[in-house]
Amino acid sequence: LPLAVLIDSNTASAAELVAASIQDLDLGIVVGQPSFGKGLVQDVATLPGAASLKLTVGKYLAPSGRCLQKVQYTENRARIQSFLKQGKSVASNINLDESRDKNDGVQSNFQTLAGRSVPANMGVIPDIDVSANEQLSDLETALVLQGAYDRFFDKILSSSRTDLAKEMYSRSTISGSDNTKIPLPPKRLLTPADIRSLEAFILDQATNGKFVPVDKQIDNIESNEKSFASSIEAQRRLASDIRKLFATRSDRIQRLADTLLRERFFRSSANLRLQLDDDLQFKQALNCIRDRARYDAILQRSSSL
Image (cartoon, rainbow, N blue to C red; front, top):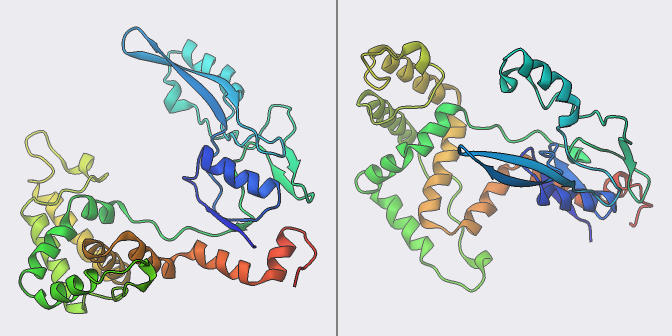
C-alpha cells in the first residue's frame, strides 16, 4: 500500500525520526515542510542557584546513518567564547541556526536504500514540499485565545441564532458505533450577517477593554501612567486593525468561526474530516498516492501499475 507521512516545522524528535526512517527505507513519501531538526540526546543536571546544565550524551541516527540535528553547537564554540570574554550576551549575538547545513567535516550526504540522496543535519527534507496553510496572525490568535469567539457564540446561540443551536444539538446527539455514520455538520454555519455581527461584537469588546492583544505596538503606545487597555491611541489602532482584518480576511474568519462553533457540538473526528478539505498538505499527499506513477518515480521504483 502507498504511504505518505505529513510533516512540518514543528515535527521534532521521535516524530521526525519515524518520518526519516520511512524515507531512508523508501517505504513511503514525506510531504510538507522541513522538520524541526532535533537529533540529540540530552541529560539535564540541576546546579546551585536555580541553574541547570544540559549535557549532550548522544545522537539519534536515521537508518541511513544521518543525524537530523540542525544546530551544530561546536561551530559556535569559538564565537561564544569570544563574546563571553567581551562581556556580551551570547543569546543576542549567536545564531545557532546559521550552521544548519554544515557538518564540521563529517559526511553530510547519505542515501536511501534506493539510492536517493538525503542530507544530514537539516531535519527531514520532504519529498514533496508544500507550503503550510496560512498561519493565523497575532491578532487572530489573540481573538481565539482570549475567548472573543466563545463570548460571541454564547450571545447569538441564546438570542438571534437559537435555530442554529437547535440544529447543531440535534445533529450532534445522533449516535452510532461508527463515526463516519454520524451526519457531518454543514461546512458553513454562520451567515454573512453573523460575520458582520461578529466584527461589531469584537470592536465593542475591544472598546470596553475585554480584549487586549499581545502585540508589538504595546511598547510604542503604553505609558507609565496608563495600561495598554486604557490607552485611547491603542484602542484606536486596535479598532483599525480589527476592521482591516475583517475587510481583508473575511473568508478565513468565516472558516475559523465555523470550525470553532462546530467544536462546541461535534466530536473531533467529525470536525477533522471537514478540515481536511482545506488542508494543502493532505491534498498533495492524497493526489500523489492516487498518481501511482508519480509516487513510484519519487521513490525511484519501477511502476507497479
